[in-house]
Image (cartoon, rainbow, N blue to C red; front, side):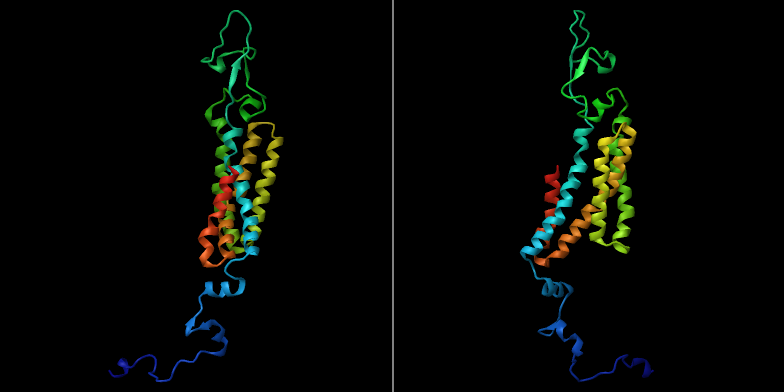
Length: 229
């Protein structure tokens, strides 16, 4: 019975002396935390770190542009009556789908939005909202797929570059879209690419500085996102 009451570790009166390899990690008899080690090597905050944070945050500016650009590109522009005949059937309250093409015209250029460029004014709401829906569907699927790449093979920095590349090229390719279906596919790719930009930027920003400045630098990405809008 006495053997069961014996402590697992023998009692000793000797003072604990850390191994010489651990001495650099001990200050004032306290072990350094990971934050202390990082700040000791890269510093708490400097101008070089600020410049790096600004460059990383630029990705959020273009992310904001692609997120909110559909408000303008997919909107239905205003129109006016253009008939000059005495038998006027066009009024400001008329249904545009019930008028002939000679009785009305768009205000400004006919290529201002996808609605006026591809004559979608009488299309269903499913068709007109398809590009924006495709964009956010791509964002959802991109979050599921790209998040694993950041933690396994690519890392945050390479994934941020890849995401910006996919988003930028697909966004530029929308210029050459000939119909709403191609446009929706490209918007899907753009949303897929930008899915991981927010998390990558936030983590890269907070890793660049000491814990004292993480809150201030962490909101920098959200500030640039607002500027993009």
